[in-house]
Length: 490
Image (cartoon, rainbow, N blue to C red; front, side, top):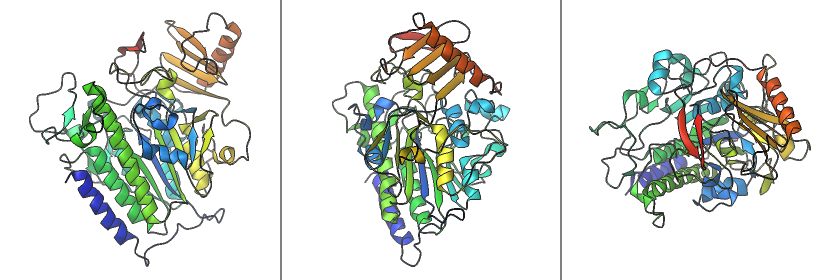
Protein backbone atom coordinates (compact mmCIF):
# COMPACT_ATOMS: atom_id res chain seq x y z
CA UNK A 1 0.00 0.00 0.00
CA UNK A 2 1.40 3.43 -0.94
CA UNK A 3 2.21 6.02 1.76
CA UNK A 4 -0.58 8.19 0.35
CA UNK A 5 -3.23 5.64 1.21
CA UNK A 6 -1.66 4.90 4.58
CA UNK A 7 -1.95 8.63 5.37
CA UNK A 8 -5.53 8.71 4.13
CA UNK A 9 -6.44 5.97 6.54
CA UNK A 10 -4.87 7.84 9.43
CA UNK A 11 -6.81 10.94 8.44
CA UNK A 12 -10.10 9.04 8.46
CA UNK A 13 -9.42 7.79 11.99
CA UNK A 14 -8.34 11.26 13.14
CA UNK A 15 -11.42 12.91 11.69
CA UNK A 16 -13.71 10.37 13.31
CA UNK A 17 -12.12 10.98 16.69
CA UNK A 18 -12.14 14.78 16.31
CA UNK A 19 -15.79 14.91 15.37
CA UNK A 20 -17.18 13.16 18.45
CA UNK A 21 -20.51 14.83 19.35
CA UNK A 22 -19.35 16.18 22.67
CA UNK A 23 -16.45 18.02 21.00
CA UNK A 24 -18.12 19.48 17.92
CA UNK A 25 -19.29 23.06 17.61
CA UNK A 26 -19.74 25.80 15.04
CA UNK A 27 -17.24 28.69 15.03
CA UNK A 28 -18.17 31.48 17.41
CA UNK A 29 -20.00 34.53 16.08
CA UNK A 30 -18.18 37.72 15.14
CA UNK A 31 -18.23 40.20 18.03
CA UNK A 32 -18.72 43.00 15.47
CA UNK A 33 -21.56 41.55 13.38
CA UNK A 34 -22.95 38.66 15.38
CA UNK A 35 -22.74 36.44 12.28
CA UNK A 36 -21.03 33.03 12.44
CA UNK A 37 -17.43 33.42 11.40
CA UNK A 38 -16.26 31.10 8.64
CA UNK A 39 -13.39 28.70 8.79
CA UNK A 40 -10.99 29.78 6.04
CA UNK A 41 -8.67 27.74 3.82
CA UNK A 42 -6.39 29.39 1.25
CA UNK A 43 -4.58 26.94 -1.05
CA UNK A 44 -1.72 28.40 -3.10
CA UNK A 45 -0.23 26.14 -5.76
CA UNK A 46 3.32 26.77 -6.92
CA UNK A 47 4.02 27.57 -10.61
CA UNK A 48 0.63 26.27 -11.76
CA UNK A 49 -0.43 27.88 -15.01
CA UNK A 50 -3.85 29.04 -16.14
CA UNK A 51 -3.92 26.23 -18.71
CA UNK A 52 -2.95 23.57 -16.15
CA UNK A 53 -6.42 23.57 -14.54
CA UNK A 54 -9.29 21.98 -16.45
CA UNK A 55 -11.80 24.38 -14.86
CA UNK A 56 -10.91 26.81 -17.63
CA UNK A 57 -11.92 24.46 -20.42
CA UNK A 58 -8.38 23.55 -21.46
CA UNK A 59 -8.20 19.78 -21.37
CA UNK A 60 -4.46 19.34 -20.88
CA UNK A 61 -4.59 17.85 -17.38
CA UNK A 62 -7.81 16.82 -15.62
CA UNK A 63 -8.21 18.51 -12.22
CA UNK A 64 -11.69 17.47 -11.02
CA UNK A 65 -11.14 18.39 -7.37
CA UNK A 66 -9.80 21.85 -8.09
CA UNK A 67 -12.59 22.36 -10.63
CA UNK A 68 -15.16 21.43 -8.00
CA UNK A 69 -14.34 24.57 -5.99
CA UNK A 70 -15.41 26.69 -8.95
CA UNK A 71 -18.40 24.54 -9.86
CA UNK A 72 -19.70 24.88 -6.31
CA UNK A 73 -18.54 28.48 -5.99
CA UNK A 74 -17.00 31.12 -8.22
CA UNK A 75 -14.51 30.80 -11.08
CA UNK A 76 -12.55 33.96 -11.90
CA UNK A 77 -11.41 34.42 -15.49
CA UNK A 78 -9.28 37.56 -14.95
CA UNK A 79 -7.56 37.00 -11.62
CA UNK A 80 -4.02 38.22 -11.08
CA UNK A 81 -1.16 37.88 -8.66
CA UNK A 82 1.21 40.76 -7.90
CA UNK A 83 4.35 39.22 -9.41
CA UNK A 84 5.25 36.44 -11.84
CA UNK A 85 7.64 34.89 -9.32
CA UNK A 86 7.11 33.19 -5.96
CA UNK A 87 8.39 35.34 -3.09
CA UNK A 88 7.07 38.77 -4.12
CA UNK A 89 3.72 37.26 -5.11
CA UNK A 90 3.34 35.67 -1.69
CA UNK A 91 4.38 38.91 0.05
CA UNK A 92 1.53 40.75 -1.68
CA UNK A 93 -0.98 38.04 -0.84
CA UNK A 94 0.06 37.91 2.83
CA UNK A 95 -0.27 41.65 3.35
CA UNK A 96 -2.99 42.86 0.97
CA UNK A 97 -0.47 45.47 -0.21
CA UNK A 98 1.66 45.74 -3.30
CA UNK A 99 4.97 44.29 -2.16
CA UNK A 100 6.65 47.22 -3.94
CA UNK A 101 5.34 49.41 -1.09
CA UNK A 102 7.86 47.73 1.22
CA UNK A 103 10.65 46.74 -1.17
CA UNK A 104 9.98 43.01 -1.70
CA UNK A 105 10.40 43.42 -5.45
CA UNK A 106 12.59 40.39 -6.16
CA UNK A 107 12.84 36.87 -4.81
CA UNK A 108 14.72 36.64 -1.53
CA UNK A 109 16.44 33.44 -2.67
CA UNK A 110 18.36 31.40 -3.36
CA UNK A 111 18.23 29.82 0.08
CA UNK A 112 21.89 30.52 0.84
CA UNK A 113 21.50 34.24 0.13
CA UNK A 114 18.27 34.40 2.11
CA UNK A 115 20.00 32.91 5.17
CA UNK A 116 23.28 34.81 4.75
CA UNK A 117 21.69 38.26 4.29
CA UNK A 118 18.62 37.65 6.48
CA UNK A 119 16.11 38.64 3.81
CA UNK A 120 12.36 38.40 4.29
CA UNK A 121 8.97 40.03 4.76
CA UNK A 122 9.58 43.23 6.80
CA UNK A 123 8.63 42.74 10.42
CA UNK A 124 6.43 45.85 10.46
CA UNK A 125 4.16 44.36 7.80
CA UNK A 126 0.99 42.73 9.10
CA UNK A 127 0.24 39.28 7.69
CA UNK A 128 -3.22 37.91 7.11
CA UNK A 129 -2.49 35.46 9.93
CA UNK A 130 -1.65 38.35 12.29
CA UNK A 131 -4.96 40.01 11.43
CA UNK A 132 -7.03 36.86 11.88
CA UNK A 133 -5.39 36.02 15.21
CA UNK A 134 -6.64 39.39 16.41
CA UNK A 135 -10.13 38.14 15.48
CA UNK A 136 -9.68 35.03 17.61
CA UNK A 137 -8.74 32.61 14.82
CA UNK A 138 -6.41 29.66 15.18
CA UNK A 139 -3.89 29.92 12.34
CA UNK A 140 -1.87 27.25 10.55
CA UNK A 141 0.64 27.22 7.71
CA UNK A 142 1.32 23.92 5.94
CA UNK A 143 3.77 24.01 3.05
CA UNK A 144 6.03 26.62 1.48
CA UNK A 145 6.75 29.93 3.21
CA UNK A 146 9.49 31.63 1.12
CA UNK A 147 9.22 34.93 2.99
CA UNK A 148 12.38 34.61 5.06
CA UNK A 149 14.18 31.90 7.02
CA UNK A 150 15.61 33.99 9.86
CA UNK A 151 13.98 34.02 13.28
CA UNK A 152 12.32 37.39 12.68
CA UNK A 153 10.56 36.01 9.63
CA UNK A 154 9.80 32.50 10.85
CA UNK A 155 6.09 31.67 10.39
CA UNK A 156 5.32 31.20 14.08
CA UNK A 157 6.68 34.72 14.62
CA UNK A 158 4.50 36.10 11.81
CA UNK A 159 1.05 35.16 13.05
CA UNK A 160 0.91 31.39 12.58
CA UNK A 161 0.11 29.22 15.59
CA UNK A 162 1.28 26.11 13.73
CA UNK A 163 3.77 25.56 10.93
CA UNK A 164 5.05 22.56 9.06
CA UNK A 165 6.82 23.01 5.76
CA UNK A 166 9.82 24.56 4.04
CA UNK A 167 11.24 28.03 4.42
CA UNK A 168 12.95 28.20 1.03
CA UNK A 169 11.63 28.20 -2.53
CA UNK A 170 11.80 24.50 -3.31
CA UNK A 171 12.88 21.11 -2.03
CA UNK A 172 12.97 17.46 -3.05
CA UNK A 173 9.59 15.74 -3.13
CA UNK A 174 10.82 12.28 -2.19
CA UNK A 175 13.93 10.15 -1.85
CA UNK A 176 14.83 9.25 -5.41
CA UNK A 177 15.80 5.77 -4.20
CA UNK A 178 12.14 4.94 -3.47
CA UNK A 179 10.99 2.41 -6.10
CA UNK A 180 9.00 3.90 -8.97
CA UNK A 181 10.11 7.54 -8.57
CA UNK A 182 10.30 9.34 -11.92
CA UNK A 183 12.28 12.55 -12.21
CA UNK A 184 13.99 14.99 -14.53
CA UNK A 185 17.55 15.75 -13.36
CA UNK A 186 18.30 19.35 -12.47
CA UNK A 187 21.21 21.04 -14.24
CA UNK A 188 24.44 20.87 -12.21
CA UNK A 189 22.80 18.84 -9.44
CA UNK A 190 25.10 17.09 -6.99
CA UNK A 191 25.68 13.35 -7.37
CA UNK A 192 23.18 11.40 -5.30
CA UNK A 193 24.78 10.47 -1.97
CA UNK A 194 21.68 9.37 -0.08
CA UNK A 195 20.98 12.88 1.22
CA UNK A 196 17.52 13.93 0.07
CA UNK A 197 17.25 17.48 1.45
CA UNK A 198 20.14 19.79 2.23
CA UNK A 199 20.12 21.87 5.46
CA UNK A 200 18.50 24.95 3.88
CA UNK A 201 15.73 22.96 2.18
CA UNK A 202 14.51 20.69 4.95
CA UNK A 203 10.94 20.34 6.17
CA UNK A 204 10.55 21.94 9.59
CA UNK A 205 7.78 21.87 12.16
CA UNK A 206 6.93 24.12 15.08
CA UNK A 207 8.70 27.11 16.63
CA UNK A 208 11.75 25.05 17.55
CA UNK A 209 12.33 24.00 13.91
CA UNK A 210 12.02 20.28 14.45
CA UNK A 211 13.19 18.52 11.29
CA UNK A 212 10.54 16.30 9.69
CA UNK A 213 12.10 13.21 8.15
CA UNK A 214 9.37 12.30 5.66
CA UNK A 215 11.53 11.63 2.60
CA UNK A 216 9.96 8.21 2.03
CA UNK A 217 6.54 9.80 1.37
CA UNK A 218 5.72 12.01 -1.61
CA UNK A 219 5.68 15.58 -0.31
CA UNK A 220 2.39 16.62 -1.93
CA UNK A 221 0.66 13.60 -0.36
CA UNK A 222 2.23 14.39 3.01
CA UNK A 223 1.07 18.00 2.99
CA UNK A 224 -2.43 16.89 2.07
CA UNK A 225 -2.45 14.46 4.98
CA UNK A 226 -1.29 17.18 7.39
CA UNK A 227 -3.92 19.59 6.05
CA UNK A 228 -6.73 17.07 6.50
CA UNK A 229 -5.57 16.37 10.04
CA UNK A 230 -5.44 20.11 10.82
CA UNK A 231 -8.97 20.63 9.48
CA UNK A 232 -10.42 17.72 11.43
CA UNK A 233 -8.77 18.79 14.66
CA UNK A 234 -9.64 22.48 14.45
CA UNK A 235 -13.15 22.18 13.00
CA UNK A 236 -14.15 20.42 16.22
CA UNK A 237 -13.39 23.57 18.20
CA UNK A 238 -15.60 26.60 18.69
CA UNK A 239 -12.58 28.67 17.66
CA UNK A 240 -12.58 29.34 13.89
CA UNK A 241 -9.45 28.43 11.98
CA UNK A 242 -7.40 29.82 9.11
CA UNK A 243 -5.33 27.33 7.12
CA UNK A 244 -2.78 28.64 4.63
CA UNK A 245 -1.92 25.54 2.58
CA UNK A 246 0.96 26.03 0.17
CA UNK A 247 2.15 22.86 -1.56
CA UNK A 248 5.28 23.09 -3.68
CA UNK A 249 3.59 21.36 -6.64
CA UNK A 250 4.19 21.63 -9.49
CA UNK A 251 7.37 23.70 -8.91
CA UNK A 252 10.60 21.91 -9.78
CA UNK A 253 12.32 19.57 -9.14
CA UNK A 254 10.15 17.57 -11.52
CA UNK A 255 9.58 14.41 -9.48
CA UNK A 256 6.59 12.12 -9.21
CA UNK A 257 5.71 8.67 -7.94
CA UNK A 258 4.66 5.78 -10.13
CA UNK A 259 1.04 6.13 -9.02
CA UNK A 260 0.69 9.53 -10.66
CA UNK A 261 3.01 8.86 -13.57
CA UNK A 262 0.87 5.91 -14.62
CA UNK A 263 -2.20 8.14 -15.01
CA UNK A 264 -0.82 9.66 -18.23
CA UNK A 265 0.36 6.85 -20.51
CA UNK A 266 -0.57 8.85 -23.62
CA UNK A 267 1.86 11.70 -22.93
CA UNK A 268 5.01 10.90 -24.89
CA UNK A 269 7.33 13.52 -23.40
CA UNK A 270 8.87 12.24 -20.15
CA UNK A 271 9.10 15.79 -18.82
CA UNK A 272 5.48 16.58 -19.59
CA UNK A 273 4.22 13.26 -18.27
CA UNK A 274 5.98 13.86 -14.95
CA UNK A 275 4.59 17.40 -14.81
CA UNK A 276 1.05 16.14 -15.47
CA UNK A 277 1.50 13.60 -12.68
CA UNK A 278 2.59 16.35 -10.30
CA UNK A 279 -0.51 18.41 -11.13
CA UNK A 280 -2.67 15.32 -10.63
CA UNK A 281 -1.11 14.78 -7.20
CA UNK A 282 -1.90 18.39 -6.38
CA UNK A 283 -5.51 17.82 -7.41
CA UNK A 284 -5.70 14.74 -5.17
CA UNK A 285 -4.40 16.86 -2.29
CA UNK A 286 -7.21 19.36 -2.89
CA UNK A 287 -9.62 16.42 -2.87
CA UNK A 288 -8.29 15.38 0.54
CA UNK A 289 -8.95 18.90 1.83
CA UNK A 290 -12.50 18.99 0.47
CA UNK A 291 -13.20 15.56 1.94
CA UNK A 292 -11.88 16.68 5.34
CA UNK A 293 -14.07 19.78 5.29
CA UNK A 294 -17.11 17.66 4.42
CA UNK A 295 -16.28 15.19 7.19
CA UNK A 296 -16.02 18.07 9.66
CA UNK A 297 -19.63 19.06 9.04
CA UNK A 298 -18.63 22.67 8.36
CA UNK A 299 -18.82 22.72 4.56
CA UNK A 300 -21.41 25.49 4.25
CA UNK A 301 -19.51 27.94 6.43
CA UNK A 302 -15.99 27.21 5.21
CA UNK A 303 -14.48 29.74 2.81
CA UNK A 304 -12.06 27.96 0.46
CA UNK A 305 -9.80 29.76 -2.01
CA UNK A 306 -7.58 28.11 -4.62
CA UNK A 307 -5.03 29.97 -6.72
CA UNK A 308 -1.46 29.80 -7.98
CA UNK A 309 1.40 32.10 -7.00
CA UNK A 310 2.35 32.76 -10.64
CA UNK A 311 2.28 31.16 -14.07
CA UNK A 312 3.77 27.91 -15.30
CA UNK A 313 7.57 27.53 -15.39
CA UNK A 314 7.85 28.06 -19.13
CA UNK A 315 11.65 27.96 -19.08
CA UNK A 316 11.19 24.19 -19.35
CA UNK A 317 10.81 24.07 -23.14
CA UNK A 318 7.51 22.59 -24.27
CA UNK A 319 6.11 22.02 -20.77
CA UNK A 320 3.66 24.93 -20.62
CA UNK A 321 0.84 25.85 -22.94
CA UNK A 322 0.96 29.10 -24.94
CA UNK A 323 -2.83 29.03 -25.29
CA UNK A 324 -5.05 30.74 -24.37
CA UNK A 325 -2.52 32.91 -22.50
CA UNK A 326 0.99 33.63 -23.67
CA UNK A 327 4.04 33.29 -21.46
CA UNK A 328 4.61 32.03 -17.95
CA UNK A 329 6.69 32.50 -14.83
CA UNK A 330 9.06 35.52 -14.78
CA UNK A 331 7.25 37.23 -17.67
CA UNK A 332 4.69 40.03 -17.57
CA UNK A 333 2.66 38.40 -20.29
CA UNK A 334 -0.79 37.30 -19.08
CA UNK A 335 0.46 33.75 -18.61
CA UNK A 336 2.91 34.98 -15.99
CA UNK A 337 0.51 36.93 -13.77
CA UNK A 338 -3.04 35.80 -14.60
CA UNK A 339 -3.69 32.62 -12.64
CA UNK A 340 -6.36 30.03 -11.91
CA UNK A 341 -8.45 31.41 -9.05
CA UNK A 342 -11.54 29.76 -7.55
CA UNK A 343 -13.55 30.45 -4.39
CA UNK A 344 -16.25 28.49 -2.56
CA UNK A 345 -18.36 29.58 0.43
CA UNK A 346 -21.80 27.92 0.20
CA UNK A 347 -23.36 30.04 2.95
CA UNK A 348 -22.55 33.30 1.19
CA UNK A 349 -21.80 32.67 -2.49
CA UNK A 350 -24.08 31.18 -5.11
CA UNK A 351 -22.44 28.25 -6.87
CA UNK A 352 -21.62 28.09 -10.55
CA UNK A 353 -20.69 31.74 -10.96
CA UNK A 354 -18.16 32.92 -13.53
CA UNK A 355 -16.76 36.33 -12.60
CA UNK A 356 -15.08 38.18 -15.47
CA UNK A 357 -13.95 41.45 -13.90
CA UNK A 358 -10.32 41.99 -12.96
CA UNK A 359 -9.41 40.90 -9.41
CA UNK A 360 -6.15 40.38 -7.53
CA UNK A 361 -4.61 38.17 -4.86
CA UNK A 362 -4.38 41.47 -2.95
CA UNK A 363 -8.14 41.15 -2.43
CA UNK A 364 -7.85 38.07 -0.23
CA UNK A 365 -6.67 39.97 2.84
CA UNK A 366 -9.60 42.44 3.05
CA UNK A 367 -12.17 39.90 1.86
CA UNK A 368 -11.22 37.31 4.46
CA UNK A 369 -10.72 39.82 7.26
CA UNK A 370 -14.14 41.37 6.63
CA UNK A 371 -15.74 37.91 6.52
CA UNK A 372 -14.11 37.22 9.89
CA UNK A 373 -15.69 40.35 11.36
CA UNK A 374 -12.55 42.49 11.27
CA UNK A 375 -11.65 45.85 9.76
CA UNK A 376 -8.57 47.06 7.90
CA UNK A 377 -6.21 49.24 9.92
CA UNK A 378 -6.02 52.89 8.96
CA UNK A 379 -2.26 53.32 9.54
CA UNK A 380 -1.28 51.99 6.10
CA UNK A 381 -2.49 51.78 2.53
CA UNK A 382 -4.21 48.57 1.48
CA UNK A 383 -4.44 47.82 -2.23
CA UNK A 384 -6.93 44.95 -2.09
CA UNK A 385 -10.69 45.28 -1.85
CA UNK A 386 -13.45 43.22 -0.26
CA UNK A 387 -14.79 41.05 -3.08
CA UNK A 388 -17.96 39.83 -1.36
CA UNK A 389 -20.20 42.80 -2.35
CA UNK A 390 -19.10 42.31 -5.97
CA UNK A 391 -19.82 38.59 -5.90
CA UNK A 392 -23.14 38.95 -4.10
CA UNK A 393 -24.50 41.60 -6.48
CA UNK A 394 -24.42 44.48 -4.01
CA UNK A 395 -21.66 46.31 -5.91
CA UNK A 396 -21.87 46.68 -9.69
CA UNK A 397 -18.61 48.55 -10.29
CA UNK A 398 -15.47 46.48 -11.04
CA UNK A 399 -13.23 45.89 -8.01
CA UNK A 400 -10.21 47.57 -9.66
CA UNK A 401 -9.71 50.33 -12.21
CA UNK A 402 -6.19 49.08 -12.86
CA UNK A 403 -3.52 46.67 -11.63
CA UNK A 404 0.24 47.22 -11.99
CA UNK A 405 3.46 45.22 -11.74
CA UNK A 406 7.13 46.14 -11.34
CA UNK A 407 10.26 44.01 -11.35
CA UNK A 408 12.85 46.41 -12.65
CA UNK A 409 13.47 46.89 -15.48
CA UNK A 410 10.12 45.20 -16.20
CA UNK A 411 7.06 47.41 -15.75
CA UNK A 412 3.44 46.73 -16.69
CA UNK A 413 -0.10 47.87 -16.05
CA UNK A 414 -3.58 46.74 -17.04
CA UNK A 415 -6.18 49.49 -17.33
CA UNK A 416 -9.55 48.26 -18.55
CA UNK A 417 -8.95 46.13 -21.63
CA UNK A 418 -5.54 47.67 -22.31
CA UNK A 419 -2.23 46.19 -21.16
CA UNK A 420 1.23 47.78 -21.28
CA UNK A 421 4.43 45.85 -20.69
CA UNK A 422 7.70 47.66 -21.19
CA UNK A 423 11.34 47.45 -20.26
CA UNK A 424 12.37 50.73 -18.65
CA UNK A 425 15.83 50.43 -20.19
CA UNK A 426 14.23 50.94 -23.59
CA UNK A 427 14.64 47.42 -24.96
CA UNK A 428 10.95 46.97 -25.79
CA UNK A 429 7.46 48.42 -25.35
CA UNK A 430 4.43 46.16 -25.78
CA UNK A 431 0.82 47.35 -25.88
CA UNK A 432 -2.10 44.96 -26.20
CA UNK A 433 -5.88 45.09 -26.21
CA UNK A 434 -6.80 42.05 -24.15
CA UNK A 435 -10.43 42.05 -25.22
CA UNK A 436 -9.49 41.60 -28.87
CA UNK A 437 -6.16 39.85 -28.34
CA UNK A 438 -6.00 37.87 -25.07
CA UNK A 439 -2.97 35.95 -26.35
CA UNK A 440 -1.01 39.21 -26.72
CA UNK A 441 0.14 38.51 -30.25
CA UNK A 442 -0.31 41.98 -31.81
CA UNK A 443 1.79 44.85 -30.43
CA UNK A 444 -0.13 48.13 -30.83
CA UNK A 445 2.48 50.44 -29.28
CA UNK A 446 3.32 52.16 -32.56
CA UNK A 447 -0.26 52.52 -33.81
CA UNK A 448 -2.17 53.56 -30.66
CA UNK A 449 -0.10 56.43 -29.19
CA UNK A 450 -2.96 57.90 -27.12
CA UNK A 451 -3.63 54.62 -25.33
CA UNK A 452 0.10 54.11 -24.86
CA UNK A 453 0.51 57.51 -23.18
CA UNK A 454 -2.54 56.95 -20.98
CA UNK A 455 -1.10 53.69 -19.66
CA UNK A 456 2.42 55.07 -19.27
CA UNK A 457 1.10 58.01 -17.26
CA UNK A 458 -1.06 55.73 -15.10
CA UNK A 459 1.92 53.48 -14.43
CA UNK A 460 4.16 56.39 -13.45
CA UNK A 461 1.52 57.70 -11.06
CA UNK A 462 1.28 54.26 -9.43
CA UNK A 463 5.06 53.80 -9.27
CA UNK A 464 5.50 57.15 -7.51
CA UNK A 465 3.98 55.58 -4.37
CA UNK A 466 6.32 52.60 -4.36
CA UNK A 467 9.78 52.29 -2.77
CA UNK A 468 13.11 51.01 -4.02
CA UNK A 469 13.85 47.26 -3.79
CA UNK A 470 15.39 46.18 -0.48
CA UNK A 471 17.75 43.82 -2.32
CA UNK A 472 18.76 43.31 -5.94
CA UNK A 473 17.57 40.71 -8.38
CA UNK A 474 19.60 37.61 -8.91
CA UNK A 475 21.37 37.51 -12.31
CA UNK A 476 18.81 37.71 -15.09
CA UNK A 477 17.86 34.67 -17.12
CA UNK A 478 17.16 34.24 -20.81
CA UNK A 479 14.53 32.02 -22.33
CA UNK A 480 12.26 31.92 -25.33
CA UNK A 481 8.70 32.87 -24.37
CA UNK A 482 6.28 31.30 -26.85
CA UNK A 483 8.69 32.02 -29.69
CA UNK A 484 10.06 35.38 -28.46
CA UNK A 485 13.43 35.59 -26.64
CA UNK A 486 13.55 37.65 -23.43
CA UNK A 487 16.05 38.54 -20.74
CA UNK A 488 14.12 38.48 -17.46
CA UNK A 489 14.88 39.34 -13.81
CA UNK A 490 14.48 36.66 -11.15
